[in-house]
Amino acid sequence: MAQKPVVAIDDITRVDFQSRRPGCDKAVMHEDGAVQSSVFRVAPGSGVPRHLHSRVYDIFVGIKGALEIRYEGQHGNGIFELRPGAFCAMPPGVKHEVYNPSASEEAYFFIVHAPHEGYDFVPVEFRHLQPALEDSAYRPPSHP
Image (cartoon, rainbow, N blue to C red; front, side):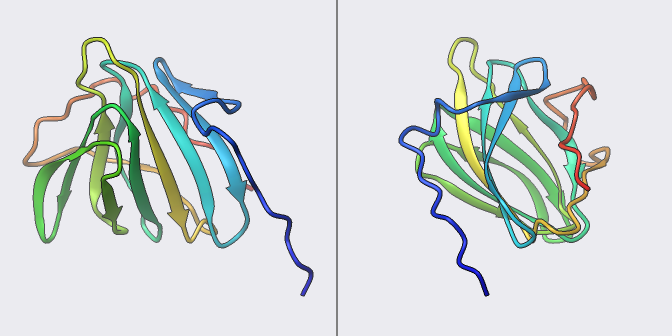
């Protein structure tokens, strides 16, 4: 098996971001069939709207600012505050959204999609929580 190259980035807040929706940008730092590692930059009042993944975990780590991860699943509902250094593992099948409630501060988070192979983004509605984002103009990344 051929060895893969090392990926090293000095500052993950200064990478080539691509817009996903107004105020929400994503930069993919590493990707192969097993995993995708990315960073999101989220403007105040923006985020990633309600969705779930049927086979993929979302592994979140807060980098800068504070974000709300709203979720609904078979084991409960809630709002987790993702601050710098905080961690959240969102299992497949759990409805969730990511929102920046700040009026003035950008927020950044690191995310791993695992496994990346078979990634899907399924828009959903919450049954128990009030969504923070009403806009569904999110453009999930396209995958072959």
